[in-house]
Picture (tube, rainbow, N blue to C red):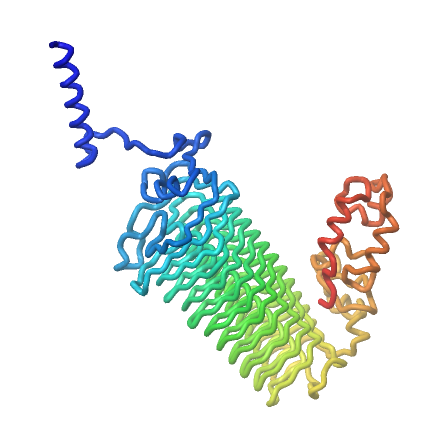
Length: 537
């Protein structure tokens, strides 16, 4: 009897605990979690099936732990109306309401495919695979063939990344937003980091729209995007729509179209820096349109753009309008517009130095081969493109100047529209400016006599064959003149094949590209990574 009564009593307690857990949960010490693992770094929760994925997505108790994806997950046939993981629970405002993801999600180089999120026009925000990451980490994850559509804060992988990290990830498919902060990979990056990632998604929104990140106030590095990007408002770009942080070692190749503050790489850079980046897509919009950046108030260095640029006002091959610093940069695309049109910068109100442009420039007024309208400073720059304008404020270098321009040159042999002056209209300071024939533009003393730095900035080793280029432009595999890695360089490289003791022989004339003391297969891989680099720039 005693044994029976004890058993019944314990059973009653167990039943009571279960009832409490299912009710208020006030007596529950922990929640039983179904996934394998323990949520630690050494023993993460494991997602090994679609059922496991659903379990993880539905239970926020997993979201502050370590989780690893151990299988590809196919979400075909489903349509979500909110983010799958860490969704916003109140779409009545633009702040995030819900449980943020604060753990570590390791995609383990697996894929989540066919994700479809469509709010059906309900105005939902924070839409993506992850709605909101707060000091969390998402890494090594692929989102393939996704389709995400919503209102504001929309990203293929992460809608809002707050102090978190996204690394070694990519997304493909399409991302659409009816408002702002729309990105192919991340909608808004709040002081977090996005690194070693890419997006091929086509992206469409209104403002703060980017092929990779819609709005960035953190760090974006070693990333790229290839999808086309369009928007009807401000700050639309191939990589980052609006930038208030740092963008480095990144590129974009998609075409960009929209309204104002449009760039091949960044639409509006209101703060921070952009360095060692490039864009190749064509850009077309209204005002503040640039091949690399539409409107800049930060710093831009060691960057270039090659796409054609079309707009109305403040249109530049590299930057539409500059209120910051631009240095050691170039552009090669053709530029056309109406007012304030420049081969490099449409309108400059701050500092431009050590830059060049080679594209043809077309406009009506304030048209220049380098800068359309200048109210800041321009120094140690050159332009070679043909310039065509309709009034007197048209110049080989600058259309109109009320600032200062010094030690700059332009090529007179490339002009076919009758431009004969360096500055169309000048009420500022102009020092040591000249239009010169191509032969003199290929001569080093033309520039050294004007104080150009050929030690740490410029290179003209192929004198008589090229215009000056930046030292950072010259590829390690570019052995012979003229510049550009081609069959001449390959022949030179082949003559050193299997040479050894390179450290004692000047790196075998530079052909020991990995400095391993011999010329071998590792070097030939590096060589072909640079194939045709520098041709025609």
